[in-house]
Image: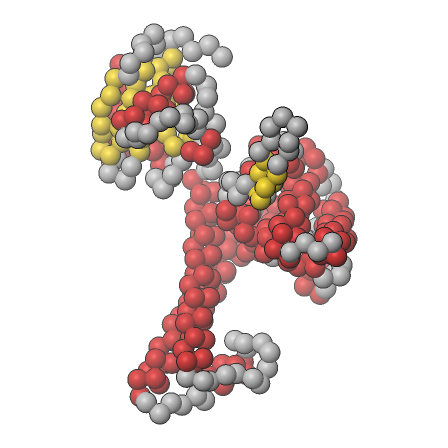
Length: 374
């Protein structure tokens, strides 16, 4: 693609300020300045770029904690194309030992002009809102787990061991907690506070689950969420999180591309006749990778369609159900084959999660699944 007549702009965005480096056509050194990261200042930046650039303007900045708001604000301000760059794929010179915001902005502008950057496919504002709601639920569940662990540690320190049933946090366990008494009043206050905190977080999680279940019944999430729920180990919360995090399966032309995006493929360092493969790359979306690894644990059990899974499959396309059934049989046998070879269970689960990605891709990729026909 020709770059003549195009102005390239690199931006190093932070919470309070944005460093801008503008490379005009034919120039080697950029024009640099700094603007505040505020809506009014960004609108003025968009107008300034349009005014001073002789032709097309292309901007970029690294994906990070500032999200996609800057991109949307610049594109709304005028005829400016703004793209978000994958930070982990930016070329780095081994000898570079100086890093500043100005240098980063200049570097982005030069690399954008040489077409050496990898762009991120941004979600829509609606998809991003659902994604953040899913992450909010995940944070609440993590808070619940931590609070339960704190209570369990407190009870161990007081030699209070629950032995009535194997399962904790059922009704018998809660009744046992209510019946606990301590000699010292501060211990009783501590127990009551931990229990109250757990109940409050459980209410938060329940409320968020209801919100996500309601969203899962609406377009465009209704169909893909229902298809994913046909898989063992994937219910509404996991399904809508997968759909909102990945938000467009058409960008993954093969299942291997999706596996690589999720960091589930082995790392490799090969040279000459030596081929060395290491642990998984752990690149890409950590939230989706964790959800898939959690779902992969279910495939250690013998293939079976229980009452809950049968209800989730009612009215769903036969092609999707066939893919989910193949996943059950394939992954169960694969799981135990790897275990019998002496592989550690964490490695086995990661391998199963990688293969589960292939089945999920086959179900959701429009050109590959053909599952819309019932």
